[in-house]
Image (cartoon, rainbow, N blue to C red; front, side):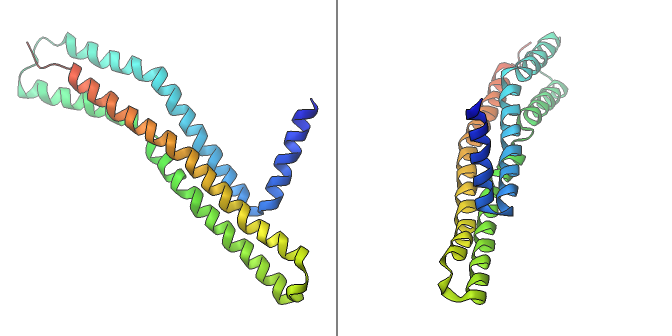
Length: 175
């Protein structure tokens, strides 16, 4: 149980190093990962059921060659595409937001350094170190968050496109 306490203290100390912007970055990364996990679970469960339901509805149609049937097919594919891509744009936005928040942390940390320089001159190295820490830790955290999200958002986007393409191929126009 001590390892849990040690981990909590390490996280608390790390959050203290980065200043208030690091809390915003942590929240952004948390929301991003909640959405990524939701999409992964969706792809493993609900998406398969939706695909099967659409396929069964299409196969149950007696006529599939007319213009009207073609429009219904396009509607089914479009709705499926919307369902599998839901949330991916938000994940992409959060991935792009992480480095921007890191940059904001850099700016606020450098402002802290300049305030220390203005008040005490260059002699107070310990006070300047706190500002430098506030400048570098959020930058690093924003980049790590963005890099972790980029990989998964790319995988999710490709998977969504592949699933929509597969559905298009399986809904045949014969009969």
